[in-house]
Image (cartoon, rainbow, N blue to C red; front, side, top):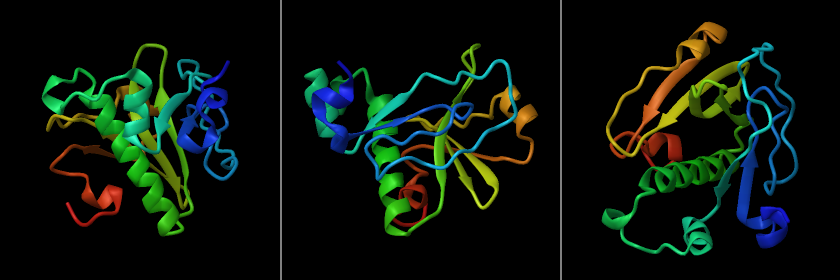
Length: 163
């Protein structure tokens, strides 16, 4: 039984990788098709799941501990930022395709947006670590922008002010 059938489509989003047609589950239908170059190392069928509310995620995994006792703070932070970004996109009527990027050799970018014919990559980190985009990404998409989001730099991404 799928996660969607267990908790319903109204509580989570499933994003598929960029190589596959971006598929939005639980958020007003399906996204439009964006197909990158056919890179043999890109994974195309492994979805990432995000919840509209971290409380639902916490309930499913039975973990309501405080942040200092959690071993999943990075996943909580990523889920929070993605849900807030999607709300911001909807409120501002932003025309955008959302997906993530991952290769078989474990190179990954957490969040990709395709807007106005341009790619914007975002790496989401709980710690104030600045990372460079993976070499395979830079090679395949040399004109794409890339930004690291962390607790001191996320507000404009989430639509809650400048950061």
